[in-house]
Length: 143
Ligand SMILES: [Zn+2]
Image (cartoon, rainbow, N blue to C red):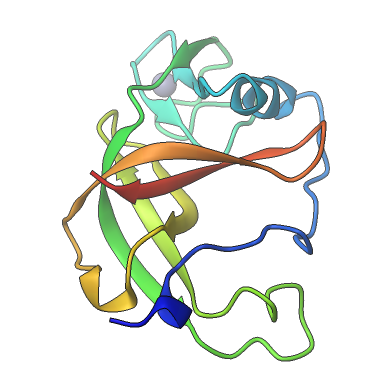
């Protein structure tokens, strides 16, 4: 283990999302450190990425609903080289697909661990990293 390999991104050069009507509540809830996702009123499917229509049943009805913040690493990779792009000061950085307890899968970063600590199936818990006053990223750390 080396300190240089601690996965702790600075977030300072991140490209910012375009916040639209369908995603505004998601980003607002991330700023509040209490992420909400759209839960289908018809079939109960938890939607991610937010949008107007349920990916499972096609319903337009949904309710923004808080998530537990608990999940598992569905898969991941560790980026070691990012020369010339937004992540070049943050490598190594872990990029994971996190399967939430609710079933939705979010792409995020797994922070504050060593690359060799990561394994598919490990439990993770949500954390937050503010980029600016408008955008806070949901991040995950090992539980
Ligand atoms: Zn549905």
